[in-house]
Image (cartoon, rainbow, N blue to C red; front, side, top):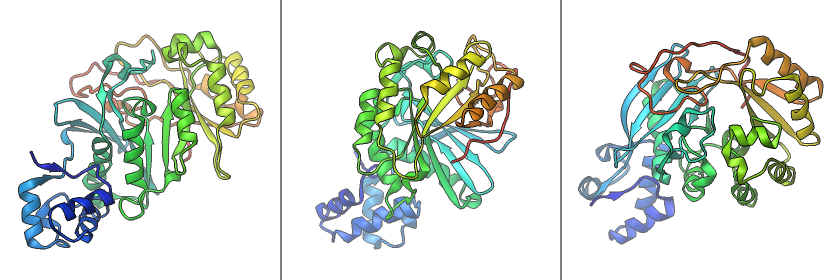
Length: 361
């Protein structure tokens, strides 16, 4: 069985080099080739001696996921359907903009949280991803778009799965991404989105280095949130908001609250007023996400006027509120649509609802 290299830290690869009877610095060179230069063919790792490249060819493997299919949207978004070693599939979304590109990553195959408005919940939880499988999504997408990279890379953990239910592998992967000796993606360009796993939020708060935090809120009362997000039965809304108030924000940081607007469900003026009360006193911003159409889910997108009214109500109360521009709806790549669907054979979408300015990084 070949040694899988992806997911290992610099120190671990240095130890591997020593185990193979080589100077430790050869492990550092291998680390740099993998994570900084994105060289996945051992023959192309010309910073390594030939004998080591030949041994790597015999005894090691990089371990990137396999691209099952690419789906390209009319807006430039690309959805990658990736097959893992055990034949499970996950999805990664590439979203280019003028000055940056954003990668939406999965941390689990499927999802156990089962938010009622999200297609991923229909899959159930298949398994957690390893740190290598999480990091591999980034390396693969960056390399696939090497000729079209923007100046900055943003990472959002908003694909399949609940990151805080796969805490150790997720944080290990993020440390690899943020390492200045490797991928060098700054922590402030990484956002972890959670449905409200309170023990995980508390654990994240204690990390010496951590990503930005986004809370997927989506309702303003306990009963409504339980109906839309069953996780609320275990982690109640009041307790979640208290944990958010205690979260140790850095000087430059705001908590992000994501609010999926469901037509006729949670988009009323009363909902907006309750959201203002919930967030009172918090250094926060709100990303409003008009629901993206998904087969088999009994919801509808809100009217454009309703979205604008909701946003204006929040802004009038002094809240930073943005409407997230839908990306990749036509290829099932938008928020809440990731369910390993084949865009060529899935039911056609009736795309309606609001589009607004993108939420800022």
